[in-house]
Length: 161
Image 1 (tube, rainbow, N blue to C red):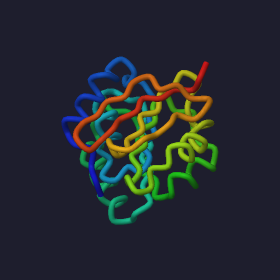
Image 2 (cartoon, rainbow, N blue to C red):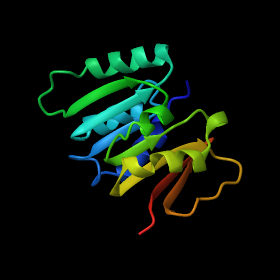
Image 3 (cartoon, rainbow, N blue to C red):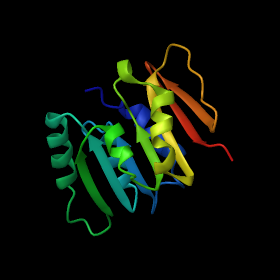
Image 4 (cartoon, helix red, strand yellow):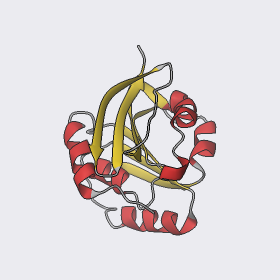
């Protein structure tokens, strides 16, 4: 597990301040759920966190359950599933999707194809990948912003209009 470092998470959420409240959030490859939990604590209407690895999924569930009962927080669910299989089920639409796949498995074109229908028309995808190395944004997507934090590159993407 490679959790999103705190500095990067804070910067991402500072830039998303207006988008998070009342949003429907999907946290793919959630690990311990740090991105979904941050969105939830900042007023997301709902958070769905998807994690395949059972030991991380258990930690994810425990992390969300520690905040259950706060009347200011929206709904949440922790789903134990492969992110691609979950997306094939026709999930969504989500206003904000975080995708933090293991760096060695970060296949942006494959993920963007799978995410396509799950993202709301005006939604935003935040894709995390290794900071070094080339990449290209597939047709049908616009890169809104790119930030690098040490070994981490965060890409903010939306459907082409």
